[in-house]
Image 1 (cartoon, rainbow, N blue to C red):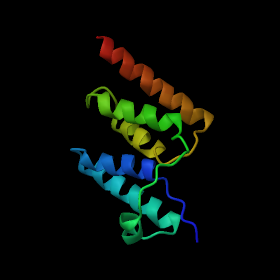
Image 2 (tube, rainbow, N blue to C red):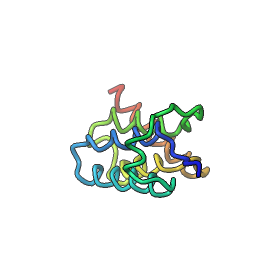
Image 3 (cartoon, rainbow, N blue to C red):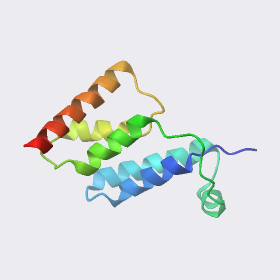
Image 4 (cartoon, rainbow, N blue to C red):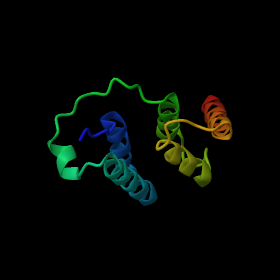
Length: 115
């Protein structure tokens, strides 16, 4: 049976476990666990496999969400916006409304950096 697990994405999700916010750490752990489970693999298999980089590029919204999460001060985005950014890391694509929300958060963060 061929296992399909995006190791690049898994490593990004696991990196979110370094957050100073317990809720984000718990969300990242749950997301990583779900990724492994849905791939049909076990953690033991994941940790013993040779990591072969995926030729599939991560969707661009992942990079944007990670950039925003890494660069914002707590007071720039709301708890809802932070949860939204963490949540879209689990999506392969965004709906039109989700893309608009991401763009809105990006504008808000970019404007705050100029001041």
